[in-house]
Image (tube, rainbow, N blue to C red; front, side, top):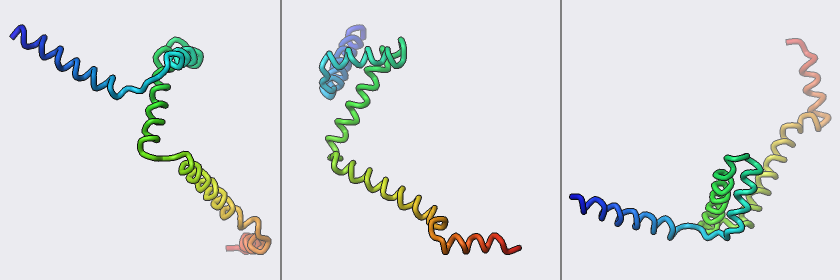
Length: 114
């Protein structure tokens, strides 16, 4: 029993570490150092942890975008469509005030007692 536990621990830990490092993102040490410095600048001492953590999250999101095929063209089209819809909603919202005929009708309805 004393031999089985350490052997199983070594086998399992090696498998887990290999799986983690196999899927890791390669980052130049300069970028890691820069993320630590910028993290310290932004978050004080806690930036030693937060800087590289945020960098890893950003790199993972970029890898996911590359993997699942969301191209920058598609993202740009979606952004333009969202801006267009927001402008359209604002025009519809304020179109009552922009059209003089509608404005006069709304003013008349406000003058009439209920």
